Length: 119
Image (cartoon, rainbow, N blue to C red; front, side):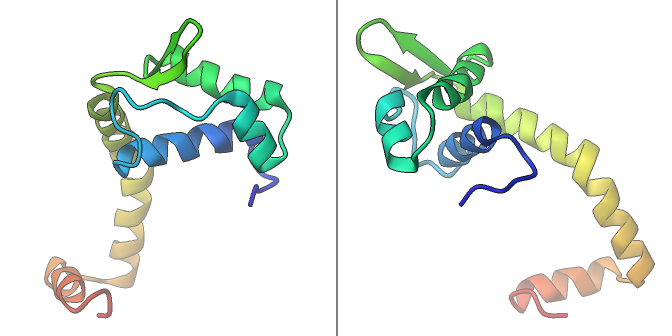
């Protein structure tokens, strides 16, 4: 469930972000409580709090005193913009290099997409 290469709080944060991007958590939705997540995943509540605090710091989630944590309006748009920018900066250059090395053309890539992934 958790990999050893990345801190668990960061993996938990990425899971919440994934849920937002996939539409499973929408603006105004409540996040599960720190205690609930800690119990469900057998984590230290401090680990869960650290993940949630980073989401608050990035204004993706807001604390509502006595009520819990909620996804903010505009969180998904903000995430999409930052994830797209990160993809283009960090992942796309490596993909382009791999495509170039394999000698694949745009036409071959489009045909593979239409066939469901096989070239």
